[in-house]
Length: 132
Length: 375
Image (cartoon, rainbow over all chains, first blue to last red; front, side, top):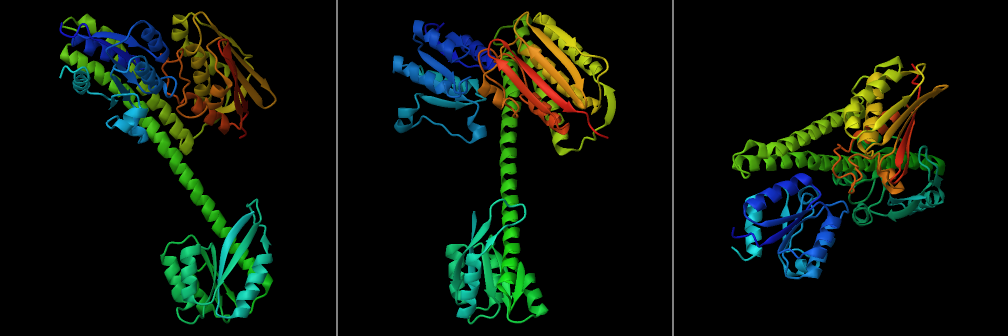
């Protein structure tokens, strides 16, 4: 299949979200690697560099997503990172990574709020991987 | 020391000065208020000057002469009460005219002083006004805090309710699109996960209803003398399926003689929560030891597990609503985050205590002490 050489790392402590995303991305032909938390993800990153990472913001450590995104970027600046979060709407916290200034401290290319529509996520992935 | 800004408005210099002198020296000790209250006194000669100072200085207490050149005392009173200030006004009337006083109070004054008055009378009236003001402010502050807590509770609740819905919806979507093909068995795990999440959501709603009932005081407590060992036995039975799955053994040590005046539903909630937690957060092949004992009018329930334990910091947050200790070991354990908050609320109803001693990796012991309720 057309995407099978593209490795996507997904990191989330919500096992249901992880499973669903894995199924959906695999059905699009991507090579999917899952991690249930920041630690597991850091281990995986020692072995491989993904072509794209989808990281949940709220993991066991409150800022796990942020620091993981930072580590991914530090390892390879060119890996696109999508941060997803379930907290934005409830807390009134608004994140965005649209401007250079925001991108300079938030090490992510795109922010998405849960629940995420898979079609939208797929569009973002294709855009970031320049498959659009 | 609480300082109340006070503005004295009178066209007579002598009056302004004597009030200022008396109040500046005065230190009020008010009932229910720990700190003494003192007064920082400013003066104004005319209604116009007073309005200016009210708008800029925002005084707490206003002493206002009824008769003023220019804007009259009553006009000024009307203006400042319509401005929705947090200020109490005491009207000073030239002679003991009940009518004037009534008009002033009707228009928003808290009290009145009729000339001539002694420094003592002045201080008494001002301290009454200060008392009212300070209490009203405290009530307002408490209400705001309550509002804030409630708002937080509801937003977290919203999040907790949305999460299982998102999860079930995601699985449904995959099933609808038949992403994994036509074979039904491919979807079995998803159906199981949906059922687990729905079950968790139902538990959350039940816990929420318990919590609301306890908090609102609307559930009538039915206090009766019960032997409480049977409740512990039922709670153990309820926990057995999960315990068997994890090969966790449960031991109950309780003399049949323990009896207390209590609401059976409340004791069941305490025991169910503590015992199911001790099983849920245990290790494979671990054990749960439950001990009930009674001494005089105190009943002690202790539940000891050999589970994952927790740090002191984690233990200190444990009884708050929606606090769940999140780490690698707990992430796959379902819970509403309300169980221990409910237990704590019930324990409070019995003027009891609950505490937890825990060592990470070794286990936790929860100890509840309940006072035998009095009829």
